[in-house]
Amino acid sequence: MRPLLPTILLVLALGACSERFDTDQQRLCRQAIPALNAPGTPITIERSGTGSHPHILRMIYLAGPSEGPVRRRSIDCLFAGEGQGPRRGALIGLASDGQPMSDASFYLLRRFYLEDRLDPPVDPGAAAPLRLPELSPALAYGLQQALSGLPSAAIYALLACAYALIYGLSGRIILSFGEFAALGATAAVVGAALFVSVAASTPVAGLAAAFVVAILVAALHGFAMGRFVLRPLAQARGQAVLIATLGLALALSEYLRLAQGTGLRWLPPVLNEPMALARAGSFVVTATPLGLGVAAAGFAATLGLVLLIARSAYGRQWRAVADDARTAALFGVDPRAVHDKALILACAASGMAGVIVTAVYGGMGFAGGFTLGLKALIGAILGGIGTPAGAALGGLCIALFEVLWSAAMPLEQRDIAVYALLAVVLILRPGGFFGDGALAPRPV
Figure 1: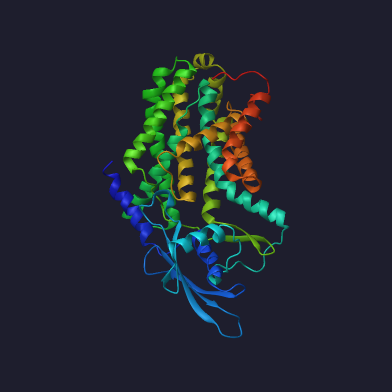
Figure 2: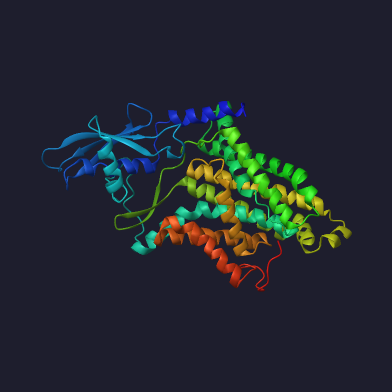
């Protein structure tokens, strides 16, 4: 545990020394400017940068008409830094022209103005290109929701494939893949810190190092799980495996809590500048290079796993063992070796999913793997948990369902709706959308 502390502190220091604020923080600060001026006052952003403190974003702007008296004003937005847990990066204070805003005024501003305002003044340094494809408002909104959901789709597809790789062989559900994703997230932070500490590198190289370290760490822990937890239970019932892997999930969660503490460990935002893709009036559809890049990596890894099972020599062995392990052994296939390799691949995919979570959302807590793994398991069941291709499609369906629900329904009820969807599918089609359509209970 102690060797991890210097690297974790190094990552936090790198994040604190950065003078760049992410696009959400810049937008939130711009949203507060109209509230500090008379209604209808034209606002022109001159420049923005770091204020008197590393966590203060200062914007200089002109308030007034283009012809007439114009006031040059400033706004300082204070964001939570290290030591704030889940609230890190949240707006916690404002100052206008050097005068701090009272706590009561700031609460009213945040509660009744910032949460509902959609069109902040445009920072000229982040202005969208003028020539963009024009879309209808509904199509633009749908495209934005789809782009925002791509990383989640890649995460669910990878984890669903992990469940299918093991269930297809043994008919057993491993309940610890979500915790392996949390393990990969922690390893990504440590790997990026180590890489930056020994070599000056670009953000892309640091992100690649995070992927490599997380995949190796998750695969190594998966190998240990296979040898010391699953192999002694090879002849046990499915319920015993469920209980054992649930206990392992709790042990991994506690292991991560002891290693990284209860606070979140964050990576500083990189490649997070939005790219304008299309527009519908004043609404601009954007995406970030980071979001598109890690989503593409996740989809590529998922496709690679599917093709590995469908077309490779190992895939033929996997399918043979999945059909009849005893007959496959008579033809020279070692079922134990096939199972060990599948477990390593599944845990590596889970670790990669954890890296995507860390890269897109900044970090992942020690207990964040349970809900993530449960949703991916639901996706695998919906798609047909016996085949990696069907499970991956089920993961994409869960991501699509969450995007549609978030766009039209209350966000706080989304998880309940996902679980209700699982219940409906198990009643109507127990084999999943792309699996066996027979209305018979699935053996677990």
